[in-house]
Length: 266
Ligand code: 5RP
Image (cartoon, rainbow, N blue to C red):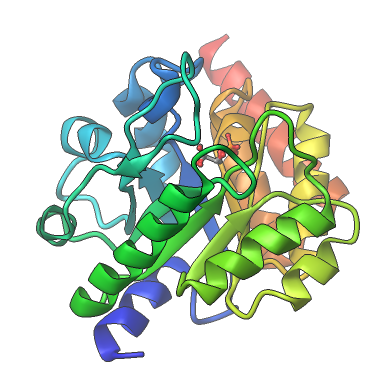
């Protein structure tokens, strides 16, 4: 791995502890104006001080993130479909030259193992890795799960391993029972997606279980920006990932941030 690739990866996975808090706000690329992300700049700005990196599309990056910001960018470069159609029918939507111009730290692409357009997405991953290797940009493979697929260790393990075999430098997947086996059989770092909004304590438990199970951290979106205290939630997630906080301790951070904000505005 060359210096540029290593340097970019070190912006995402913190060299001090080998952990990562990635803020996911790329949902609009197929969901449109997702709840909590209607005005991306308003959502993103207060959260940036607490994220190690941010995952988003180039459209939101250009319009809603200050170019003076030092936040490392994980650019979503796959898409071409919408919630109204077959989700697996994705292609690469950004050239590597534009990713270079945007000074990104990684490029992210979804693969849909077992879905109708499985091959198309896997070949896209391999092509993107070729481009990434050429320019020293790591590739994050997102193991997307089709509507009819189980989020179990067997299926997620299959998807993560295929992603790594095709050259992904980092893999995003879901937490599941026997998550450790998914991590053990994937030779590159795994980061865990938050998934649908759940009560804060559950999302913090998921964060705790993920890092304890061997993930480098979380790539969390809805459980942060749809929380009634997004800053409280990302601070709590950060404490679990980087400061070895327990779920109870993290809940207290969330509650105290939330009530502090409530006092100021109320
Ligand atoms: C959408 C994504 C999201 O970035 C990923 O699912 C993480 O967000 P959330 O925590 O809301 O699940 O890749 O396709």
